[in-house]
View 1 (tube, helix red, strand yellow):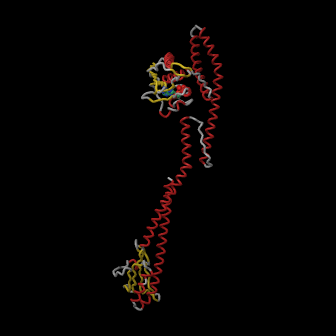
View 2 (cartoon, helix red, strand yellow; view 1 turned 45 degrees about the horizontal axis):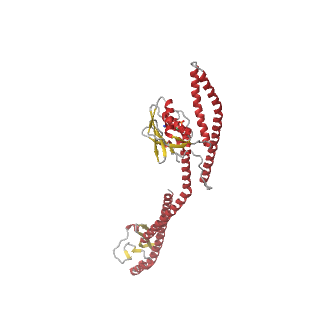
View 3 (cartoon, rainbow, N blue to C red; view 1 turned 180 degrees about the vertical axis):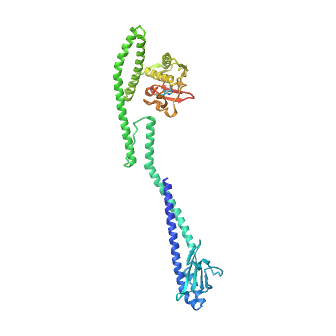
Amino acid sequence: MQVFTSVLVFIVFFTVYVVTDLKTYKARKEKNMVSLAKVLATNSSSAIDFDDAETARSILLDLKNGAPDVVHAVTTNGTGNIFASYARDGSLEFTMPPQLQTKTSFFTKDNLFVSQNILLDQTVVGRVMLEIDLSELEGIKKSKFRLAIILLLVAVAFSVIVAYVIQFYISRRLLRLSSTMDQVSRTVDYNKTLTDDGKDEIGTLIRVFNNLMNEIKLHQQRKDEFIGVASHELKTPLTTIKGYLDLLNNIEDKQPNKQFVQKSLSNVNKLESLIKDLLDVSNIQSGHLKLSKQEFNIDVLIDESIAAMQMVSETHDIVREGTLSGALVTADRLRIEQVLTNLLSNAMKYSPGENKVILSSLLENGEVIVRIRDYGMGVPDSERTQIFERFYRTKDMKITITGFGLGLYICRDIIRRHGGKIWIEAEDKGSSFYFSLPLHSN
Ligand code: ADP
């Protein structure tokens, strides 16, 4: 854009300059030739008066050396007949254009014509007419054109260099800023800041961006602290309520009292699981999520988790495909169970109207890979990384199915801490969530 603008500006300026220059040249030429014709007319007056054609011709002949760009010259007498003539190339056959009878000068494409009356005692006794060659003008035009091309190339080269420098100092920094903003919005990682010492507007913009990131981080910290404190404070009374409800459930036999107690218990359990998740998030954030690792058979854990989930599901069959032949892992058994439970319950929760979830597992490159496949609504491409961020829920999910967007965040942290990976892959219908865990090594 910049190069194009510079070239355009240059062409406009240069055209104006050349047109003005050529006009000036033509005006100067016309003035000089009119003066020359005047001199010739003055010198030829006595030759006409004495009817001395020889002298009139010799006056014109002086043009050969004095004004070499005069191609033809003619002196006519009072009756308009040719009295003397001159041709630069010595030719005898030429005619002056009739316009010269009325005009004192005019231009054609290649020539300038001028004429002047020959006066004797204020009486017109004849006329001098000149035809001037303008090929010099063509030469000037050509040399200006060459100059224009050279200057244009220099201007283009110069503006390319300037554009590159500007691109380096301005666009590059802006691109860096926009790509960081893009990353922040995709990964929801507010720890990203940029270093830039620039004192210009972009430097200011980058500083504002950094301040914004720090502000967001500060608010996140406050929110995390609040979540940590609140869930701690809620945990104690909830445990007491749950204890009393358990007791009531054991001693109460009368209906509908027992049913009320059981409903309350089920809701307290839901509340307890939410508070556990919030506590986990708070511990992950502060780096206090502890793992208590032990060696165990992952096949057994998978079967137990499926059995537990199957007991509470009235809608889905959980099908197990492939076993790990008693493979051992060293991990926090409860936390891995938490991951399995979470992925299985999501698979059922986000596939309403379906009746099957498949859990398959295999051993690959020293790792256990577990896949939980559902036939539900799937996750849009653009949100596949974001669903592992805390409090993230897919956009069209917010109203239809309840949840807090904490489970996958906790699962990712647990799996990462075990040196594994967790990811999602799209299927024709629904999606598959995978996680990997390193096998136990002796
Ligand atoms: P929650 O389920 O409480 O919202 P999660 O962290 O477990 O929290 O899941 C985050 C989001 O990822 C969900 O809100 C949902 O939008 C999406 N999601 C998770 N599992 C599935 C799945 N099996 N199919 C479709 N979407 C899913």
